[in-house]
Amino acid sequence: MKAQGTVHKYGDNVDTDVIIPARYLNTSSHKELAAHCMEDIDADFTKKVKSGDIIVAEKNFGCGSSREHAPIAIKASGISCVIASTFARIFYRNSINIGLPILECDAAAKEIKSGDEVSIDFDTGVITDITTGKTYQAEPFPEFIQKIISDGGLIKHVTKELANK
Image (cartoon, rainbow, N blue to C red):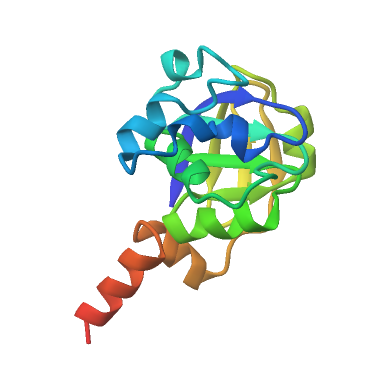
């Protein structure tokens, strides 16, 4: 599995309340959640983001409440991957559960800049900043987690596995 896109860069401690503000949690529409993604930290995010783009942030991305809406809003906005120095543990697990690829790589998170073009090989964990030519090594997910992500999340994966039996 691979991804390539333009980077939208954020700093430390991006919490779920700025990823998707609580005032929008009265909807289950992924499209509606995506329309408000990141608006409290980056008012122009939804105008700038294109399908396949990548979020890069520093430490503790997704901290705060444990709402699954945050990774859903990010994925529905078209983001193909989030790279961060570290993730809040519940956000990390929620991302896998809904099929949003995420990678921890401190050097990439600190050095990659907003607007850079980045490609990712999820099988190897190699992140390439096409703009600068620099590569970074993240720890790739084990094959079974990659399969969950490529199937679109845990529920879709389990449904697919049960259908194949």
